[in-house]
Amino acid sequence: MKSFRFSLPSLLSALLLCVASGIPAQAQNWPTRPITLVVGFGAGSGIDLVARLYAEYASKELLQPVIVENRTGGGGIVASMSVAKAAPDGYTILLQANGPVILRPILDPDVGFDAVKDFSPIGLMAESPNVIVSSPKFSKDTLAQVVDWAKKNPGMLTVGHPGLGTMGHLGAALLASKAGITGSYVGYRSGTEMLPNVLGGQIDIGSAAYTPQLKAAHILAVMSPERIEFLPDVPSIREAGFPGAYAATWYALYGPAKLPPEIVAKLNAIMNAFLRSDEGKKRLAILGVRTLGGTPNQLEKRMSDDVLRWSKVIKDANVKIK
Image (cartoon, rainbow, N blue to C red; front, side, top):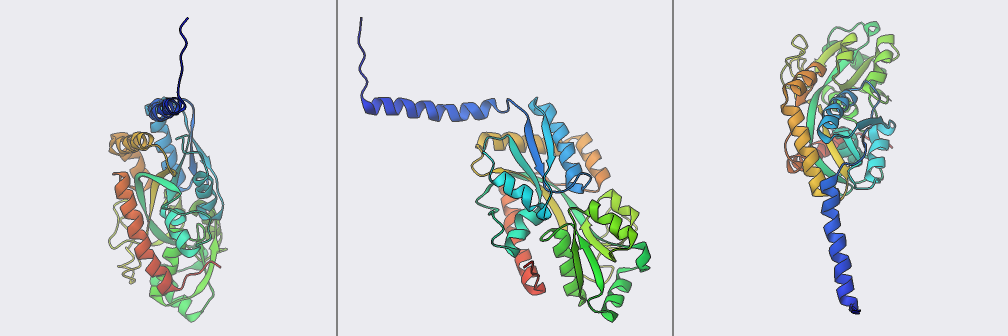
């Protein structure tokens, strides 16, 4: 019988080769079980509806269920932190708005995660314009009338938004700065949860990413330079008299940091295929969102641009959350 001898260096080399070869194999075989797609806002919110459409499409492509899980709280912060701490194995991913992942860390350096270091960018999904809505009980037909009332009643205007550091919150703060008005801000878990208090008159106006449900309130303006095709009768914020108060909420896919590039590429390809599909375009248009798409690098560029722009807005408007 032959005897075999192995030196310690050769054993270590063999072990390292096995480990190294196993990583791409695991990524190539992914997924072998259901995937959780975490969303930081409540069921029925704009981002939740987008997530469910993507999850339905991705489930068919991956041959594994993609399950949407709403982890609400902190204006999307709870969801972001949970995914930042998740294992980078592709079984926990995040669809997040620019507010919680980009804007909140600017406002609060102690938020508990870093948008660049703690996530693997996958791709830009879609964009919703922010809108200003008013309560029927407030009896103001135009944004100019709201601003005029707020100037005559300093600090009395109540403004709802989907959470601290969200685009709804900062868009409202930007408008207040441009208009020279003050008021009190009321945070909710989503624009959908804010709506009943707008309709009931508990708050005067609200600022949130557009969803079809918000049509139940009076939409005073869309926070874009021009009118948008699915709200043709609603004036742009520029037409309403406040040029420069532009705000839009974009949604992007992320994984935890160090997500294998093979998994990032597969999720990105499925996202872009979904956005290009006739069914995807049609169903997203009904929700009032504009499809984006692109590469992880393009998402990184959008993140960087947003940090520069909104850092200045936050400083100029003196927005604080503590």
